[in-house]
Image (tube, rainbow, N blue to C red):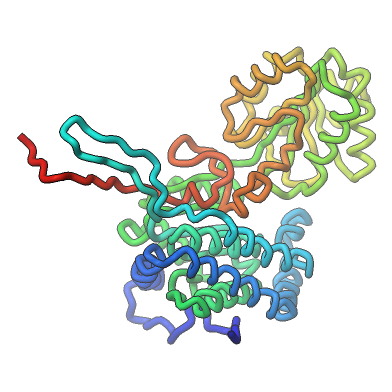
Amino acid sequence: MTISATSTPMDHAPLSPTAATVVADMARRARIAGRALGHSSTAQRNEALCQAAAALRAVRAELLAANARDVAAFSGAASFRDRLTLDAARVEAMAKGLEDVAKLPDPLGRVLSEWTRPNGLKIRRVATPVGVIGMIYESRPNVGADAAALCIKSGNAVILRGGSDSIHSARVIHGAMQAGLRAAGLPVDAVQIPPDTDRRHVADMLAASGLIDLLIPRGGKSLVERVCREARVPVLSHAEGLCHTYVHAAADLEMARRIVLNAKMRRTGICGATETLLIDNAIAPVLLPGLVEDLATKGCAFRADARARAIVPDLPPATAQDFATEWLDAVISVAVVDGIDDALAHIVRYGSSHTEAIITEDAHAATRFLNETDSAVVMWNASTQFCDGGEFGFGAEIGIATGRFHARGPVGLEQLTTFRYEVIGTGQVRP
């Protein structure tokens, strides 16, 4: 089958200027497309994803050229430039991500629970799509592909409003996703993007009660705060990724050096990067100089408390605001703590409930840390950069949820479903 990834942003005639709003028109079409998608077969949705992956590979040169235009126009920080930039390997990873989602079990139709009442009624709770999802995100073009893939597989229509920084890349990716839907015989309106970068579309999405069922913001603190403050639609929120790695007194020193270096410097601009290093006073004099050397060699800068500076005097001093900062850059805050209680207290004071890690060979200390750290993800002897849907086996993720309701941690297929109750009787009537 021949696949074309060329389309207008909406894959049909331009929107009428007399429409109430662009978003309202998109959402109504998404509702219709979502119903068809939710009732389609597993094989059909998988085919759409595999065909979209093929389309992405077919337009790789076009996508890289579009991305080069985005990067050339970008004037922000280097860490955000890295998020924005695509290369051949990242495009291939995007395509493979679509295929990986296709290989995952279908989340729809799962019987979550079932029981029989004394009167003979059989009741079961069954997984169903959420409906129409609005995704508001910044910079990273691959987020659009990941979100579209997860929504297609879970039977949800999605409206993708990416940042203006990545508009040219987003249009090519959107064309590939719609090409996959078209090739599989599914409605292309299941994946939509606004036709331009007008900021009013964000406000309209926030106000789209009754049209959009769930909003998912993915970006910086100001974006998430605005969505949570102004939305009239339920929000699956992602707070800052102010992640901590605590090196306990019983840590394996070589393991600690390896993990800390990776947790901070593998990719500094992602939300799972460690932003604060907590090191136990019992081992700080021995371990901290080596950790500083490892990180500095890779270009990391530091903000350190007085106790850390007493061990490594050249470290710049930290303020309270430094410990409350998600750096998203090659900068790390460092504090020396007196044991696990002090480490936990620091995380409670400054953390964002995203991801925390303990490095220790003491199983009792690790168990306590896992049990008493109230974050979405808690790790033992592993880099915080593993907080990722792909690494969790979800195939991809639409974001990291740090709230308390519906979902926490990496949000994959299962978290993009809700449920209905099915009640089967044999003629029962209520007395």
